Length: 537
Image 1 (cartoon, rainbow, N blue to C red):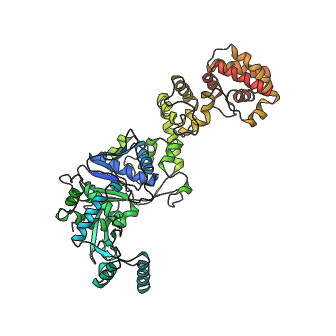
Image 2 (cartoon, rainbow, N blue to C red):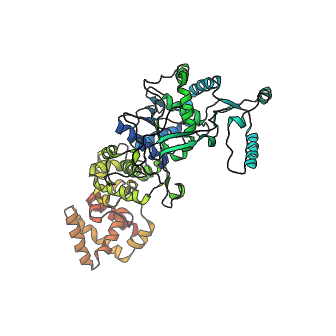
Image 3 (cartoon, rainbow, N blue to C red):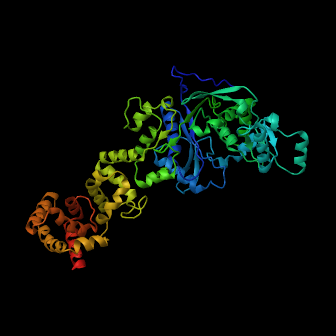
């Protein structure tokens, strides 16, 4: 077996291999991209971009019950929205079909079954696998017996004490049973792998079970398919979650078998897939990332709120904010800065600087940071970022066309200065936008009853049109006119403003009143005051 003893620094941390690196992100198609998974995708993307290598995106969709084209499309669109552009992988064409980009696809495992079958047959023929005819129930009985005899943890499956005798194999074959196939692991000895986050990680082979790599129906398990694809696609560094650390020694062993005597190359040729490029060997380095947890230090789940990237998109978080925040979940910028753009993080990022402790996902910090970015945008950029929350793409209500008309876009641009300082998420524009983009208002019944039907409300509705009809339609003259009216009616300005606000927006909550009136326009304002007056008269 190849030497995987890592080169480490004085701190005991493994060093990232030099030169361009091919890395991959390979989620199962649940349909939703968990923030922890996207953090792994981001780190892989940064490694590829910093090293001048390639970021490969593939879908591990061999579980037919979970895998659907819809879920694959959803994940593909989410990763693209995050700005994690991939060099090779699936993409959606103009007709909505899932197609491959890159010479070493397909990038959906469901389309690579022929390769896995060719590999499995060669491994069996070479004697590199052994059969297991046990049913699920028989395997459970075996495990119970092992636990009873050992009086300790889960039993370890080893060929020496587990494989069938020749007589058993003959009997099971006669019964028509089909075996699954296991990869025999060494009975003793150790394997040390290069882990860029954890330093040297040593596995005792005596505690590593022989994994099933081919099911009894002939389909490949994760262990086989994942390793075959990493070798066939030239992945040099495997960066993934720490929950997969335990499978590493088995995959190292299997990868070595795949390249021995050109087994993987013959299988690729049989399956009609592209040959490995010169110099592509097997993964030589690993990075197992710490878990992402909630602020309560428990595994991140729906009880903590949003955990899916698609939901953060719907809520109006900016992808650059998410990239920045996710980068800091386990990694610290050597400069100490927490706010940076993509170029800065790409230049500074190194897996060696990722910590080993679980990283807490702080939604409040993310939200505050998102608000900072929103407030730093210029008017045109923010206006265009708001459109998906107004045209029905992300928002609950369709207020503008897609694409918007010139008039609608001008209104949204005019709305930005009124709401920008109040917003922390883009979806918050939905609470303010309707009065500016709809001709007919929907009035809040409680506001009408409390504010417009009051004695003061009636006085304000009767007097306001006259003072607004002739003033210059800019914020300062409007303010002067309405403050003068408040003095005339001998009421505080706040009390005068509320009936006008309800009359022109339908609610007691709106952007600053003077800017609101300017954006609605003189004609629109006077028309709504008249409508409100007739409605409560």
